[in-house]
Length: 245
Figure 1 (cartoon, rainbow, N blue to C red):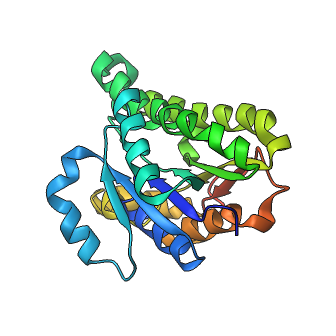
Figure 2: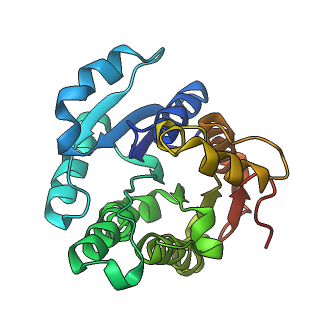
């Protein structure tokens, strides 16, 4: 284990984020999950449903100052982070000809700006500690694009550009930076899709099933391990063979 065993997981209260928190906790990390302020009324229910202890913070990660203040609170209470998982994200889908600027900015802020806003305040301490694991949760649609998701696909593709550039900057300091790109995951979001559309999606997945949040969490836990220090700048697809690049 590194000098600090704290893991910060943005979007940590979501389906994938919760599974990531559980996997990292099982590997010996203390976990700080960051949710959005709009989730305030649901946090106690979320925490009470866990089989492990997680510290929960709320911040609008699209706002640099609010993010910096949240991270300062985490450090004061829990110490410096050894692992950062950028899993926060939203969708605002529409064909580009119908997409307004607000939908574009909201998705870019929550999905891409947040990666900078979280990672920038933490990177200096990681460099000083000569250790760190940064893991960015992108999407299959950042690799292949998706109808009605120019904003989301652009933001998720941008996350991996961030990964590749930062990986080169910090490799000599013992820090790895990697992307995980999930395919379609069994979650409230996919269950809300009408059954005929859901069946059509499923027919295009060679593995014959939707992924689980735990499928993603296992890859994150592997990348977060101290022994994974020679794997950096990668984009790991976890999509059941739906898209191979």
